[in-house]
Length: 430
Image (cartoon, rainbow, N blue to C red):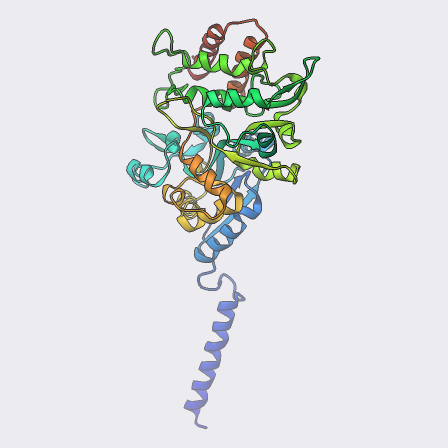
């Protein structure tokens, strides 16, 4: 073998060894091609880890220059943890947040500029109601999921009373509740047709009362101006908020024929799960929780009742969105993750895993083999909400409004007027 051949063989061996060391990452400062993470994106939210595990794995496989990770937080402490982390400079890059954060924590997010996302693209892509995220100078985040308010009903109790269908209007709801409510000789409610009228043991009382007002076309708070419209009356006889409050509270008044609920009933969720309540207003996300609480309960879901001959057919809906923190180390990398999460195949998978409706129009238009998801998709299309300056404080204002009426301290008109003044102070602090 000549010297030239020996030299070539040695050179080949050296090149092979060098390549092995390079691609194995043994040589200092050198990593395998395509596996080096130039940026990282940490997301926080209250969605279960398992709901996003596959998404993060797939993203890290397809986008090798960005390391995406997700941390699940407890819902009760999420807000305080997020605020504290951001204050200390240790917050996440991406936040999956509820609609209650939109106004209260707007200053903690980077707006998505019209150059990245035009208003037309947003409207064409995402369902009506998600525009709560839109502001004049940009969009606060991308909507992911919608959790609509629905009417759960006990099939067995309906069958016992010869009721074949759940009520479609509030008039039918009132009649059905009356037939399904049982009161003994001592005046005790032994079976409730519905759970309305109180704030202490009626789950989602604020959302139910909001629904009654929103169905009239009253937005409660205007999105663009933040003007409180709670007491706006189109005529002397049509007083949306006042009539909604009166209707709601009469279900807890023993002197009314609509009487169906009292403080003695305990939690409305527990009463329904135990088969003691015929109709329960809850969110779609509660379906599995109800089934887990009582596997033998024969129940189903339906649309919430509507105003007879009303112009709107809507329900109340919660929304989960993804937003970029102002402290994001690499906002463009976070933007890439957001786009990935709201992509059609990814959001479809997340929606099915969580049994929640997606916020994309094209996904909501799809037929679904799961009858529960099929119903939730239809309800999500109709969902509406309103911008809350501070969810805890608005809940307190609505709570006082309800208590002042059923206790007899105020007339509905006075309670609504006082609530409006309190809301105006909250939204327009000096």
